[in-house]
Length: 94
Image 1: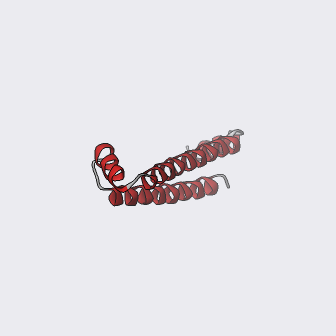
Image 2 (image 1 turned 45 degrees about the horizontal axis):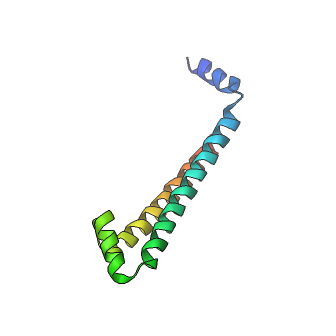
Image 3 (image 1 turned 90 degrees about the horizontal axis):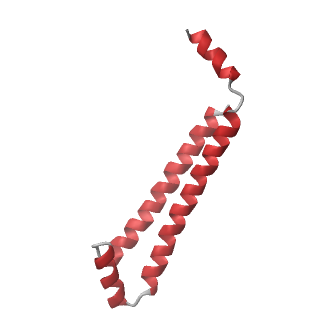
């Protein structure tokens, strides 16, 4: 059974391009997610203090500093998870 699975692995000819497509899609997702977070942070920072507080409490239900911290942490988590996934995909293509 194992020999048949190993033989099937050699028969898959589209494995490289499929992994490259998955990697490109993942990279695009990471870039879009971080760009959205940066855009939201810049928008929040561009508001005056009263409007900033009103906007973040109305939309996010939190204070501006908490929202900015959340956006920063989310961006870092997305970057780290995306990088680790790309490393795993790269090692799978070997």
